[in-house]
Length: 291
Image 1 (cartoon, helix red, strand yellow):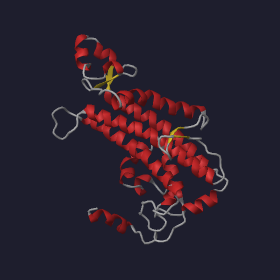
Image 2: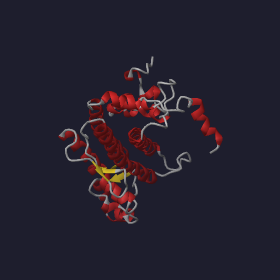
Image 3: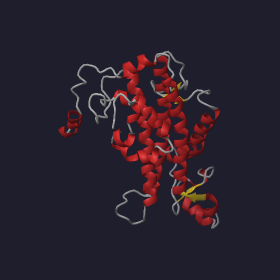
Image 4: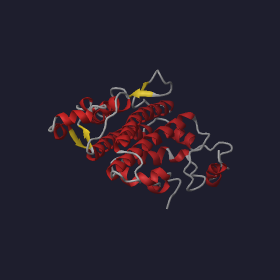
């Protein structure tokens, strides 16, 4: 039974929102620290202590906590959508009217979410830094602000976490996003050929409209230059969730160790005027107004 005073009694698969409940079984085995962090530092920002089952974040929490809640959720959102699009590609059958998008379009969306995941994770690190510093600690990520977009972050500092943590995060980005992002998102389309994707390091050679005609010039190129797309997408997800668990572990430990932790928890749970009347029914009722 859930006990609002005991964070360990909360489980994402039961007490999260619909997307968290839907994907918890798939994502948490590789990213367990997401749930640890959510239990201790996001649930206190919700209405759960006032109304069990009301998972919505309270609207009058301080902006530093709002950024913390928003960025941790954004990362989950993008990972869940990456899983969803990978599943779509895996289930696609040519001519199936139940599949309105072709795998090439799904591929673009998958890697767009991967790029947004990187941004969301850097912003999460920045949000953690702000909270930790506010309550007397040393920012664990030393996230680098993005001067083009005030309030956002473009990278972590050079010394966050352990060396292995930094290596896993760098590998997830460099090996899985950078090359595909440059071509898929910013330059030329990358078409799937026979449900296969260009191998890493070969995307440039097989991007654009000439890819299929170039393949026709060389009967041996396909097996040499391409790999099955579904295992590749699953591998990207595995690399990212392993790296994300490192990031969320560092964040969890940093908030656990802030010198003024009790003051921080008090501020997180401080219910403001007007919030007590926002029941789950009242919040959900907004969706029925046709706004």
